[in-house]
Image 1 (spheres, rainbow, N blue to C red):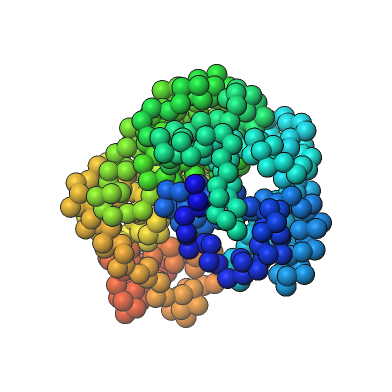
Image 2 (image 1 turned 30 degrees about the vertical axis):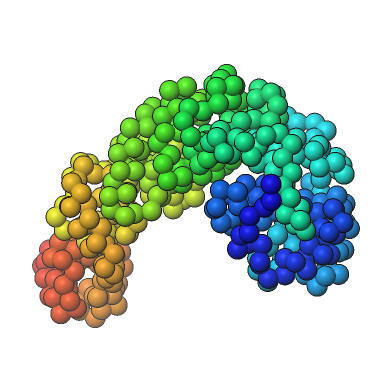
Amino acid sequence: MKLPDSAWRHREGLDRLLVALGAAEGLTRFVGGAVRDALIGVEATDVDCATRLLPEESLARIAAAGFNAVPIGIAHGTVTAILPGGPIEVTTLRRDVATDGRHATVAFTDEWRVDAARRDFTINALSADPDTGEIHDYFGGIADLDAGRVRFIGEALVRIAEDHLRILRFFRFHARFGRGAPDMAALDACEERANDLMALSRERIADELLKILAVPIASTALDTMCAHRILVPVLPEIVSAAPLRTLEVRERAAGVAPDPLRRLAALLPPDPEAAAGVGARLKLSNRARKRLVAAAERSGEIPPDIRPLAYRLGAEGASDRILLAELDEATTRRALDLLREWQRPTLPISGGQLIGMGLSAGPQVAATLQAIERQWIVEGFPDAARTRDIARILIAQQLRAAQ
């Protein structure tokens, strides 16, 4: 079988890089996701190459070809070539010497099959000759891709013992490429070794979980994960995929792209304390944690005027509330349309202006600004003239109270 033509194969500088890396002599091939995706007509974003060349020689050849070579992962054999058409990772063929479920010690090899064998799933072990387009498939990956089957290379329990993250990766790849029931040998192994997830860093778990939730239809994979208690060791708060399935329906009806963080919020109980705990456990960014907590404060209703909510939470946070609320399709669309057109206003008065209106400098200025802002929001964000009127009334009240 030949590698289908894809836009990424015409990236500026790629042909020159392949000449430098000896692709025509069989020294370098395309590998992994770009090959897999080309076979199913999906345009790849990341393009990786594997090579028989040692990392230092790859560096030298890339530089000699006039490209910047970045040795970011050179300890594990990876060099990044910075091409005009985008970065390309070039990795020396490897074999695993030792693994502990989180990290691997590798040695370099010149055998393509040995390198392919250390990859997780058959559909990810494909490689292609850049010169002839011939695809090399050592483990039946093409047949599995055609069948919509995600299958470990070799013994599933052994592969999970090598890298525990493969449990979550299995569900992500099944969500993307699988059709029908998951491979039972793989599923049984994932269920048996689910406790191994506790040995992983929470950052790796969060990254992989959010990738699963970014798949257009992720609820089927989450259904299976919940049924087999895959996430219980690390995220016991997620007990059902039903809320995610409902959100997916609302997303499609509203023409909204999948948002992994919003989907995570849907899977969590509407409990701000629980959401804060999950955000901290997964070591999410402060912004992501605040968004999860805000989404957890949801109720089944949305106020008729969505602007105050959007002002407080931002358009993204307000969209979360809308899509997670129990609204009919028409109401959801109207609220989201309003958000798309809405620009967050700025309070048209400052602390300096309040002092000029007779308020003494100090903490009282900030407190008065907050009170003005609250009334300004209640009145629907009126103009500067009305805001000054609000300020005068509040300042007068405070001055009278101080007498």
